[in-house]
Length: 334
Image (cartoon, rainbow, N blue to C red; front, side):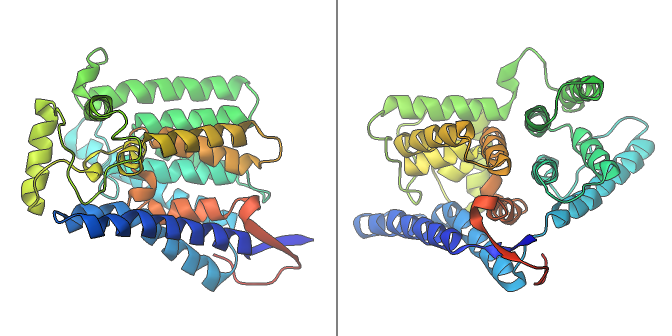
């Protein structure tokens, strides 16, 4: 019997290529710029830092066990349910849980755990799946909930339980607006929407100049910022002691990548992702991770986030294409 015992040499080679790309992208412009802001620069290097942590963990413990994702997701779900019940009881009304500090990021962790569970070769407890789903629904995170539904529909046939799930998701979606006093018809009230409009306007204003990105240590020039975002970003800049608009101000990982690396590389990556999703040679886990990452990246940083980045990389390293197999049942598990 074959068993996963760690990441393959191919995974390490890909990691080295990624590290070299970051080194080249972030070091060369330093020789030609005298106005570098080091904090924005460091913020864009975070994905590589989290990758290195994930590689150290997998190298030290040798095996990425699927059950660890679901087990810890259950712990997180229980915490969220407990917080929801206690706060709602105290307030006398339904209160959205706070979670680890940003409940949308907790929701992303739960979605990653569901992807691992749906594609695991190990026996998965249905009550654990239900608990994680319930924990996800009460985060009222629109992007994460919709992403999880798409994952579910990709791996499960439509039947009565799916219809019940869609009903619960619809209720969670509506409550997500009501609990945050957002209008269902006024999309301008959503800050993520404003960030997308701002980024698109910036790219449109300098189409070819933004084709291969802006060095992250430099602020964006000639950018029209809506008043709601201007207040938010000015306040954030004052707290950090910097001025200007930088890639890390945008919550979306897709926007951050587009601003830092350019819309041409990002477009090529998206096309390559579509090719892999359609390919029969690619594992379902990798396909679902591509779909999940793309959808979550529309509104949040995913691999840029301190409480999501390492877990995301561990999930990526767990795909069959990056694991090495060996007969037997040896080695520690993560």
